[in-house]
Amino acid sequence: MINTIASFISAAIIQSIPLLYGATGEIITEKSGNLNLGIPGIMYVGGISGIIGGYIYERMAVEPSAFLCIIIPLLSTLIGSGLMALIYSFLTITLRANQNVTGLALTTFGIGIGNFFGGSLLKLFGESGSISLLTTGNYYKTKLPFADDLGLFGETFLSFGFLAYLAIAVAIVSSIILNRTRTGLNLRAVGENPATADAAGINVTKYKYLATVIGGAISGLGGLYFVMDYTAGAWTNNGFGDRGWLAVAIVIFALWKPSSAIFSSFLFGGLYIICVKIPGLSGAAKELIKMLPYLVTIIVLVFTSARKKREHQPPAHLGMSYFREDR
Image 1 (spheres, rainbow, N blue to C red):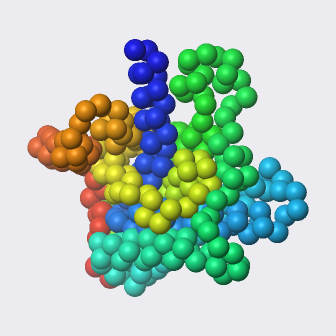
Image 2: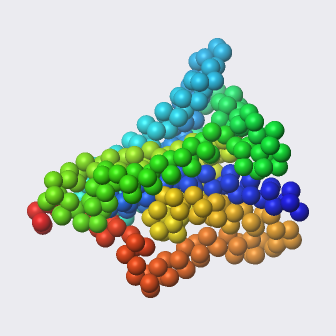
Image 3: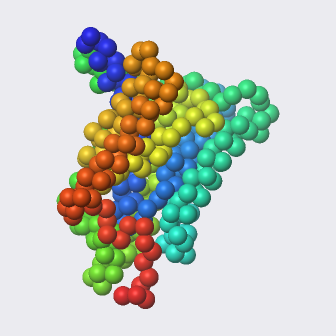
């Protein structure tokens, strides 16, 4: 019984890591007042960018270095997902395009880019088959060296690659910056009332750009984790499923708090796979159980909206463009 529970917890943690990266990145973005619904597409681009960087390096290197096998896909992901977020920033902040439409377009665009390069990357280099970066994937999946010495606890909580622990660290650091630094205070002021922040001398445009690009880059790491750790360096078109949308839902469930997103992602990761762990379920029952994360999010949204506590509400200027002339 204990082993079954431990196995479920371990599987839930694995599923939660991409969600945590996506949710943390989107929380940072939304704190600036930008609603980026392009997170699913950004995660796709982050994943395929890491695959491209890793594939080119593995193909060129005679003896691949562990450090470069890790750092090249990591940097490729940050650049690819950051560029996607920069496109969104330019369209919504500089050109003041509708944020909902732009985000949805970015999701479609990002998924298209991922599927295109995922299906044609090998052909571009005159090869055939499907992408499989076993060497790079194994480096990303390497667990902590002392995990085996700690028995069931080590197997349950310490047998993951470094990206899993980095996700938790990023969420904690983001929470500290948002709540305990002047930079975080300025960012929250921009999301709540950009006109007042502008009048106080805060560069609204700079904070919106930085928050959106950094948030997008962090979200892209969720895609890298999925392709390098979860699938061990293999790419499958449309393999991400609805994880990007779950990450957006977690933002609401966690009440726009990165620290709360850690537990929320674990909960959603468990709900995401619970239908697989329950024996004897019919196909219809499995589909109903898959609805649970979204149903829980709706319940939380209704509950927090009814209570009307300010700390449980989204940034007041979320989803709206800022026109300095209206000050």
